[in-house]
Image (cartoon, rainbow, N blue to C red; front, side, top):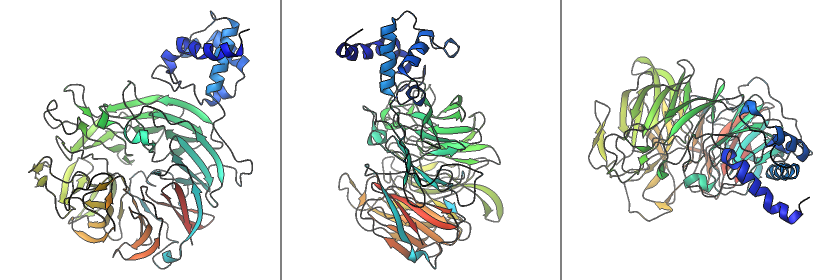
Length: 565
């Protein structure tokens, strides 16, 4: 038998020689093979059981036998695989509830925006304009990551939320731990994925779906946090990152990728919920001409009536250097209307052709059905980073309204009758008039609510400060006029985009970018509730009910805050 010291040297080398080409040098998986690190199936096996599996292989699944290795080397390799897969779930021994699931109920918050339409509008009314001022903090859940952007999901008395490469399940009434899945952050990433940014999970029946920082899609056991399967989302090596909350549509889990600022080729992909099998992949930029970028890192929306996904795309690459990318650079800075069964493109609309200033269209595409200018229509509402508010007919992409929601827009004077911007200065401001944070439309007021940055004023002060001032704004969707606004105090800071939540009781919740969680009257913008968080706010709120009581939850800095009456 080999000595222990020699075994420490030999085992990784055996893995590199015999496993890494399919499963990756980091054992996180590739397009050829699944991840072996943090693998619950491997963790559940003994080293001897794994040795026999390695000896005989699994030819039906494409895994060769390693019968040519000695018994000692097979055991070393098996032991090394075991070391990569410690138990990754940590259920609380005194869990106050046992996680189960049933048919969805009205008080649940089951998907990223609460509804596939991406309209963060809740029908719950227990918390209303008369009593919202009596909200009290019920519990706090602290994490080790200061910049949470997660949207918790709520079902059956359990909240599911994320931190960097972590999924956490807690008791919705107390915030007590139920289980936690975690893996180390991946070295060598770029952009927001490197920062650990993650916006949440998706749930369906017994599974929780999660995208890791290095663009793996995981299925996790909803009852205990065990890893069920792990697949690599891209099919080619590049600087892909993962920050997105997946979207469940029928028997598919739909995801996108980050990394347009670093030269990836963007795509939207659908995987089967049962085993992660790829159903389809829709590339956002063509191979010829050689335009890169077009990332898809914001969760889209879905119309079940027409079977259409609506997905926003990011900027072209390189962003400010256009010497080798003539033309409009399709399909960057677009809304893509996709057939959910096949991924085929039904139509598209490009907000900023030939972008030179990082004007991602990664702002929510909100779907509503309403009487619009005297006609019942299926609409898509979108406040874009380029400073224009759009109303589209979502059946065909026709522009019904396009109007600035800022008082000053320098890069384009208007949107022409052909739907194209009338460009004055391609690199004129704004470049960040709106962003990824959640928005809401109220069918009662007819107003669309979002946080805007009045960017084309003042002087640049350097990162992390930005030019201009944030405003909470309510826009009339028929006219595009600003009905009311609430100016946000303090300098505008980068990456402090917070979202809104509207309820059928006339309350609008939102995070104040520079610190605070507020509720205002949807009709007037008058403040009804204020809680001083004293941290920059980067996440949108949700609401849910359990045991007959309504609650509101939001991430603030490193903490999850839960409020109730």
